[in-house]
Image (tube, rainbow, N blue to C red):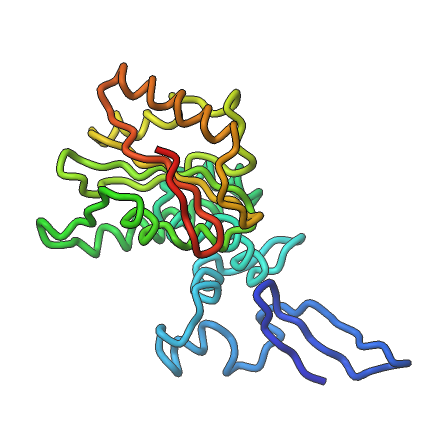
Length: 243
């Protein structure tokens, strides 16, 4: 009898019975002590844990429907590591990822604490002015299994001041509200925005909906005097620019 940690859950593999292998989803408490995330931190240091294991430690326990390690993996697959780190609204995480609000609050509090403790030196902010620079920051979106619409908010020096996941799911020009895109820009006094979304299919070509959304946001930006600097599409490890 053995087990393996997949990218989705902990799986216990039973011996073959009648030419059929039997599998059972494990809980972290079923693992040997040396493989439990908390014990790994104590014995091997925090650097020995994967991102999913670290998030599982933050969440503590899962729900009746979902084991904590499976939940942690799903959150990272659907939101992306950077996306979930920059999301500050627990209500959106609860809605987008279908998890309890208490879990969403734990995630938001964890990353906010990290931001407060880790203060970069003045002038060390990330500068993003071109599509390649934006892709370098957003390349983790290429591995997501759901379409994600994201905004990078920049100051007058094109330094990143805010990164927000605006929506999850297939883009529809009739459903994308300029209000949701420009609300963070006004909140953080951004001078320019780079918007981005991913194509889980791996196809880079812009759809008509992508073009319509871009034109709609450019028009709104002209009214608000906030520039839509670019709209990039990310598919796997490649990107393209609409503007």
